[in-house]
Image (cartoon, rainbow over all chains, first blue to last red; front, side):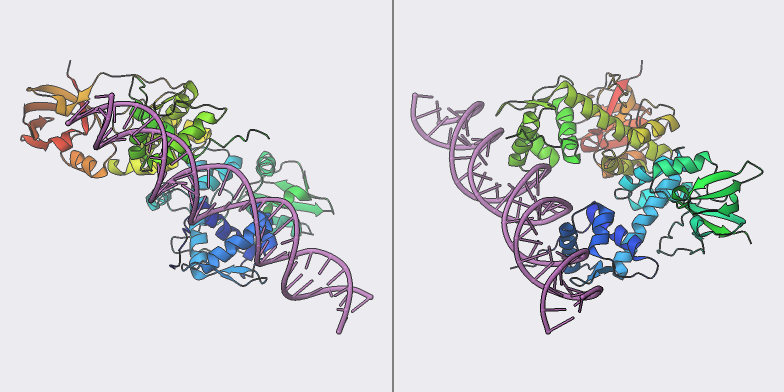
Length: 228
Length: 228
DNA sequence: TAATTTAATTAGGTACACCTAAAATGGAGT
DNA sequence: ACTCCATTTTAGGTGTACCTAATTAAATTA
């Protein structure tokens, strides 16, 4: 009986690897089935199934021990970063070349990232002048998977008055992104946080606009760094 | 027991509809299972299966009678033309905006055509200035499915000496396309056919180049019209 | 018309990626 | 150490899109 090897170049596998990557954090901790189940919108049993399949495959993308969670292998991380690169290059491309509104780039990129060729990837990268960041301010991994890591923190972590620069905005929620856009909050913008309460932050953006009251639920989507 | 309705928005269904459309010709004759089987690279039994599924579905894309072949319904034709529009717009986009070599646009477009959104379609159409033809000289269907139909004939149909213009080149075979490109044969180019034998055509392209001996197998990929 | 060939369909089966329901495991608190 | 319980896994099943082998229907030839 031959060991039947499965096809691992599927959209579905891509999505599992991406999810493990992003849930693993920078220290690449083991990720639980439940976390993956929630992130992917899939039943826990389905996750177990897929993880077993991935781990059993000769091209091992993951290290998996029953009931102890998963983490990416080197190959798995490489693949995850490749897709992340596709995703962010596509976002930049849709935004800059095809004039998409920022809140629409994510969903389109999410679909297309699985299907573009290396040539497509190379060409949009060239067309954009080898960008380092996507329109949300997230770093685009290089071809070899290298990524500059910047020190930043959530805007909601700010407890005191001070001056900051928006590093990035989350791309997960289009409605939130639209709100941020309406308030003029996008990567690179200067923020002057005036005060912070349990349910909102009061701040000024850019040059001399009137103070803005930002609910914490909205501020959560913003990451900032200090102006140096 | 409820009538379970199937999902017809799949890549696979798209490909069946495209194949039926292109095999049906302009008169939209019934297409046989075998023809579809060959075109799609799928077993005849699989074709029968899919056709039964399509015909049984409430959103009827096809008219199908057992052993009598299929043809597209109005809805099916609409869908087929929508995908053809995606395909050809993508080809034009890859060629003009992303500087793809002509022989590579087909395969990439073939993959992406199933996944781009209406917004993407609209934006590349705008970017290209609402083009009417793709880089191979094929007409791009309008949003409503309308397509100008031009009178043309295969270059291989030419038996006598005469002057012609290249209308289109086939996009099916990348190697053939490369050969044509090397000989300077592309849509819009003038051809002076000098003579035609059972296995080749002798002709001049453009301005005063030396006579070209074109095997019929290559000439088959070229459609021409008379210079008026 | 009967026999043969070709085309199309039915029958039964596979891989993939999901699902629900039931069982097993292992950590927390008593 | 034992019970409880959330988490995870196993068992069994679904829909999609394929497949091969066997059968049936239609077209062609003798």
